Image (cartoon, rainbow, N blue to C red; front, side, top):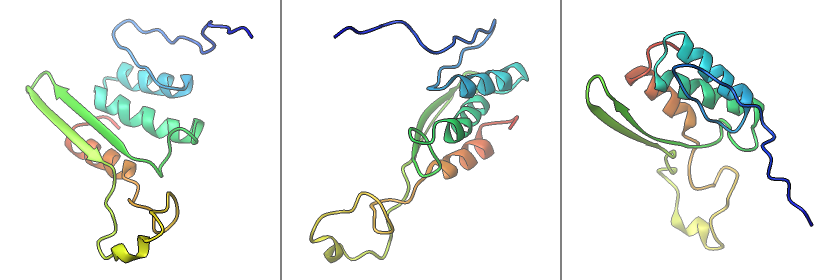
Length: 127
């Protein structure tokens, strides 16, 4: 068995910015945001949204998001755990046979859309 270790994804270059995602279209979209004067958070929201379309098995609106963001202009450090909330009125007795990994009784509600909204409201300024 042999393993080919060559890169199979195109590299996207820019003079004053860097983007790394799991898909070149998401990287290209995020880079375009940076080129238009957007912040790193603008680019991150864009990349995340594009990934939901071009690679939904790895990243989608049914997922969660976590970030730590440092704004060098203000010195502000912010973090967000958007892993979603668990249902408030669930009875633990419903899970005698274990917690389901999908469906209406799964442990949490997806939080990625909340993360985009909060990030856009609090940090981003272009998208």
